[in-house]
Image 1: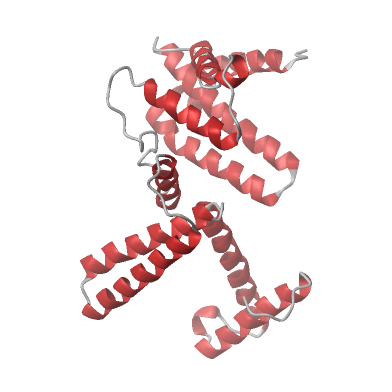
Image 2 (image 1 turned 90 degrees about the vertical axis):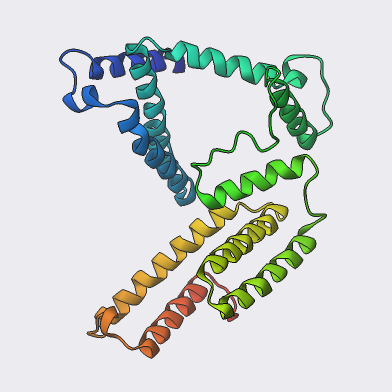
Length: 272
């Protein structure tokens, strides 16, 4: 019986090897690094959902599923003679020690901001003589909103930033005016360009308010989904389908859902 976290981790590695070995699971045995990519992404998002929902039991389960994807990739690599889980753990530990000299060495940092700046300097110096951009390390495969915020964070760390959220908000208003002008011209390509600029500028405002723009939009999408589902329920109760209801009926149902939410949460009558 495994007692420590280390024992349990070793048992998990053995379990993974058995799943992939002779007499193991046919599905697991046929997976490749490429075929596993969507599952890695899916499990990461399910962890985010579990964090939003709150119950710890769900988060424990989803973190386990995400960890299993890492174990799966290491098993595939081990079978191909590329690297092992030990290599991954060694690389990770070495990097954490190297980038935290204020913890594992004699460096001193004043605060979290100073520690982060030190991290970036050390990371830059690890380029082995190659020229590194301050924006390196932001994968282009990230969701666009998250990528925009990470890029603006990295640019801000080297001084390419607004003085504060008010200056960033002025840029939003400027981009809105440019988009409105472009919309009136009907140039789809320019509209796409200006709309992208507007979205990027909004991300900067969120960042300067210490708000995660990706998380903001995800919560807004969740709120819309919840409210729309309630509207559908109201329409069915009234003997109507959403697709057949008038715009006026849908608007009334939507406002009724919002009013109930405000009442349930003890909010004032102010519209949201």
